[in-house]
Image 1: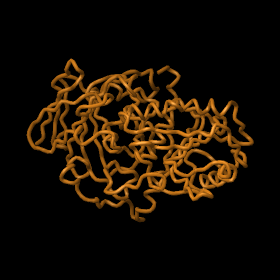
Image 2: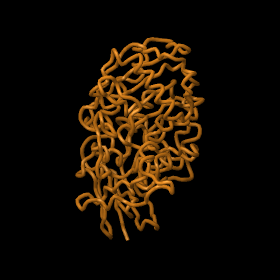
Image 3: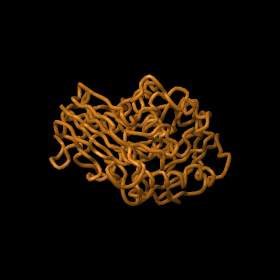
Image 4: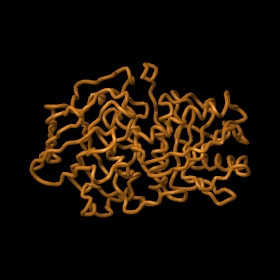
Length: 412
């Protein structure tokens, strides 16, 4: 990753969580009533917490598909991809060139991250769709609201619904001409809206899962991988209220955190939630005493991928191995990554925090101007951690010639 990527990216505000929460939260704040403990056969699958914006837990029920709250995350996922420009911001190059900035890269990213379990099918309309009003008329700015989004979608249907059949798609991508609005290094506008439909087409298709990409983001095609992750049900891992605090949360270790990071894959917890990892690939540690586990790198198919240690109804430690391959081909450091998951924390407020094996140092400082302290977070042989509050400790015992890692976990 070149030094040019040291720009500070104020990552896209995702209204998804706000829309979902708005129908379930009382005026007094978030509900703290759980859906119940995990089923006996899945003791590490912490349940989603009602009222928490995009809870990191497993929901009791989830509606997916074209009319569902989220897009399906396995099998064939169909995306309709449109390109729009404006009278005051005509596209500076062809629609095919803009589309080529994201595809086939996004399809390949999801294929690698999901071990081939998600087949991302993008159907593009390779022409610029001219919106009927100037960009300046829509009031599009950082964190723009539902009314602005609805107005834009209504105008989109006004000029596109006669020629385009929106039916049968799991989600819609709108690639906006990059010269509309400020440069991405000044204000990132890219956003995903889901959980409610802004408009309905003449054929009855609802635009209820829409990712809009603005400008030229330094993360390249991965900004769309990030935004589509919300359509699949994943939260933001960066700190919405204090973006610099992101470096003490998940850092660059998941595309839902800093999507320009050196470590471009998703956490094992996310892959398990999305159905890309099976229960057989998760070692669930609920016993008191000690046990040793062998896990293989997250980026490669097959084998055990994570040790999960729940220590309350809403909290768990996850241990996984990260290597330089696949979507993590540019990873700064390799080894055993440890992080804490909280299902009772809203999207953008730090639902996942990485445990730093080397808290006094940073690494690969060229990758970002202010987000490098967790780049050397993985533990290696001879290193470990104790969390007295959680009542557990772990140590890395060995790294095999085949690339697997042996980890010993002790619980009080």
